[in-house]
Structures are given as C-alpha cells and as structure tokens.
Image 1 (cartoon, one colour):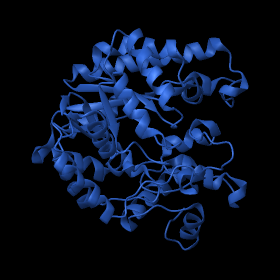
Image 2 (cartoon, one colour; image 1 turned 180 degrees about the horizontal axis):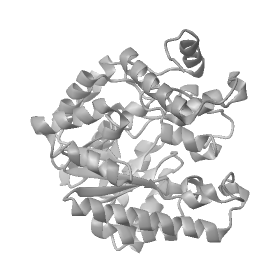
Image 3 (cartoon, helix red, strand yellow; image 1 turned 30 degrees about the vertical axis):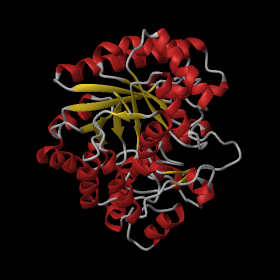
Image 4 (cartoon, helix red, strand yellow; image 1 turned 60 degrees about the horizontal axis):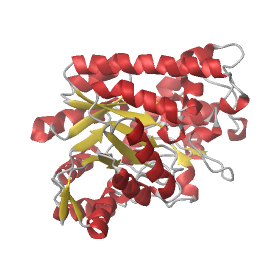
Length: 395
C-alpha cells in the first residue's frame, strides 16, 4: 500500500443533519463526534449558529480535547465569527455563494433594484449588474477572511455552487482568497458534475491557479458523488469533504468511508492518519440510528429544510433543484428559517389566509425549532398546520 496525504473533512454533524427527517439529539451527536474523531479525520464540522445546543456541543467537544479536529462552519459575518471564537474554535469554514445564479438572488443591491429585485438569472439580468455583484462578493469575502485571520483562526473557504460558476471568475476567487486560507473547497452544491467533467474541471483549475490547495465537497443528486470525488483526487485535489454513510440534504453527500476504502482497494492508496479499522464503528452506529441517505432521484431526495436553501428555492427553482420533472417539497425542523414559514403562509396551495408579520414568523420559527428538537424529527407542511390548529404552535 502507498500512503498519500489528503485532508479528510467530515460533515456528518453539520451537512449530514440537514437531511430532512434526520435528527440527532445532543448525546447522540456527542457519541458520534468521538467515534468520528477516532477515525483520524482532520476536521469535523459543526455549525454553532444553527441552535444554542449546537454552540454548547462545540464548546463541550473542544473542552474534552477535540479542538484540533472540530471546525466551525461559520456564516460570513463578524457576529458569526465571534460566536465561533466564543465557542473556542481554532479553525472555521467561511462559506459564500460564488455562482451568478445564487449571487443574483442574494446580492443586496440587486435585491433592492427597482427593475431586477424580483428577477432571476434566466430573466436577463444585465452583465454589468452581475459583475457588480461579483465584485461586491469578492470584497465582502476578503474583508471577512482577513478579519478571521486577524483573530488567529485557521480558515478554509467553501465556494457554494462552484460547479455552476464561470471558470474565469472562480479562478479569480481562488487566487485572491488563497493568501488567507488553508484550502479552497469547491462545492458541487446540486450534484450536477459527472466523472469526466470533474476530472477535467479540477485539472484545469489546478493548472490555472498554479496548483492551489483545492478540496472538494460533492453532493449525490445524480448518484455520482463517489466516482466524482475519486476522480477529483486523481486529478490532484488536496482534500475531500463528505459524511459517513453519505447522509445529507436531498440525496446526501459523498460517503467518506466509501471514498477511503475505494482509494485503498482500487489504487492501493491509504490516507495518512486514517484508522481504517475505526470506520465501521461510525457507520454501524449510524445504522442503529436509522440514519441512511435518501436514494438519488427518489421523492424523499426532493425535500428541503435548510432555511438558507429554501429562501433561494422559493425565488428560483433551479437554485437548489436541478430536475425539471419534480416538485421540491418544503419541510420544517431544526434547520428551518423564516422562509420555510413564509412558504407555508404565503402559498395559496397550502390554504393560508394571510401573511404573518416578521416578528410572528420569528416567534413561530423559535417554537418550531424547539418542538422539532423535543420530538427529534422534522415536519411536513400539513403537520405544521395541524400543530398550529391544535395550539401546539402559537401565532
């Protein structure tokens, strides 16, 4: 066997838990974290901002000696960075959308523009405005990367929707962010890559960036995340990000144990620092919890709970759904935001009577998260309306 160096970033406790219908209570998360840590992965991502219980878990794991492996997935704001610091994090993942499709939905100036605030990329937003959105994103990210470094943090950057991003612009992002980061994480957010396109894409990016430290985070919407990840490693990627058992939103992420074993048995490559004998203890524990990824193309793989994703999905169907023949389903739980509830009360198909105020939405979201945690599950739209009718959730 040949030993290779590869950064293995685990997302089981962050991206994995965004799978609709999947819930781990704090003690289960704690047990999972230690089982994952024993495999030797260099990073275990958690997101303190999701809920106070997540922030407490991050603090607890760091206090118990896992600070060198815990990495806080952190939104691009000084407040979020400060929260990760307060939890004791030594390393963080800052993330931001880089594709024109998502920038068109999230750029503050475009959202206020009288002519284009309700438009999506396919509606013909002028190139000049998209260029402004790109420049604004670059400036914002660079400011926060510098701020995080000034706080003594080790920083990685996750480029959301990188696989749908203009190549020249993506290269520009990599070059400008590289001085501040440990590695640049290329996300195939909607799982549209194929093995052939992946290998060419990674090779071309490495060539154009003089072999920058590029890692990959691939989703499994089309069932190709495993082979795509292996091809990325073969092309020169320095790291991989995924989850154990492939759990995660929609059809999940690449399964880390499959990549590690695949590299071993297919090419004779063992990743330095990984205890291969410890891998089954994680997947077997997940199996006892009933934690399994939704099958690609299945109805369950079209469900969405993350508030950030739902906000974009409601405005542009293609933002997080690549299949034209299915209808996305909005679900409600620990990862939900105000947008999930707006979809419920401002969607005539759900039989809603009138929109709520922002304050009412926020209060209802707080109740819903608490109820989802107490019940250890997610809820369909019909179930949420029933809980409101029963007075369990109060407007």
